[in-house]
Length: 269
Length: 237
Image (cartoon, rainbow over the protein chains, first blue to last red):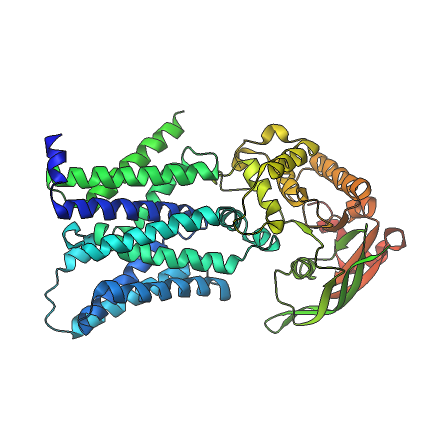
């Protein structure tokens, strides 16, 4: 217990927990819609775009955060358009954008000399890099995501269940999809600071899939996914501090444990 | 009889491929129209155009007034995703969204309306069941409840019975017939099932990229039908 209290004496740990919890809320709530709309891998794809944008930012010597947000939003909307206007399915559209971005990132990194940034921290996250601006941005993001989902709850549920029917009912499906894509993009960019490029998609997928194991209603799924996500981040950060583990990987492991427990309960109920 | 929907010179293309060519017909209030045609004849495209789900290349589809409400029952894809987290009442509730303004919240009277339609369709006991746990016939009733909950002026259905077994299919047609005669709801029903259409619908619209036949069912001759779709292959899927 003393150990846990000790953790919160450090300012960087406070920031890590605050940002982690806020990202956990945003990613889990958006995750329910993304997973059910078969866009699960968008987190992975956008994280790769973010890798390219970090490379560009370092080349131009600007802040990775402020350059990444607009680039990743554009990429996210582009994936959506590819899916709507060509006959490409969601996963293929994500795959195209994703691999193109990694290639671009690698090329930029190879031509620019004098990279002394710890690439590891972008790949696997580093709570030490979380600053004041991350706290403010993730607070704003979580507030917008929660408000958006409350106000448009019925529209969002309708397009997730049956997009054509929602459209007949006068739901602006294009706008809803674009908003989800935009908020997802911002969540990914901010979330990478916590769990890293390689692991961010788990924050989108795990809580939802865990919730799907035992929730009957849509509302319950959103609430359960959010609670699981927050619990995973808080316990993950604490355990990683105590055992001196990398925090991102620990958070994902806790998420995985929750999933297996839920899966076993459903199987043997 | 007053005109509800007018379709004039409707042409729809997918790329260079002409799917509907100069389609003209009127839907009158209280009609029960069976829309039939072979695979690729443009039935589903016509339905989507009527629902404003796809852009049209030329011509027009005019509803008598903008307040006309539409109910839509899509082709049943039995929810293969058994994990999709939605209870029956949540799904039926989405049928009430067209009259709502932001924020679209379902209030007490809406919930009463949901219960009423569930009761009418004999599925009130399924209200809190997860959609993926229901049989095909039950799921189809839930989707019909969703289409009917807002008491639409026109109910448009795209092959609603193709995934149902014959007994459930018969029940389903009886229910639709009742909705048409008792409530006076205008019905447009797309089907492969020529026999049932002849039995239950009052008018028949046969299309094969253009309108081949549009009149009351008793004027339809099977020889004409035989030319435009393969009754024996597709009558009983």
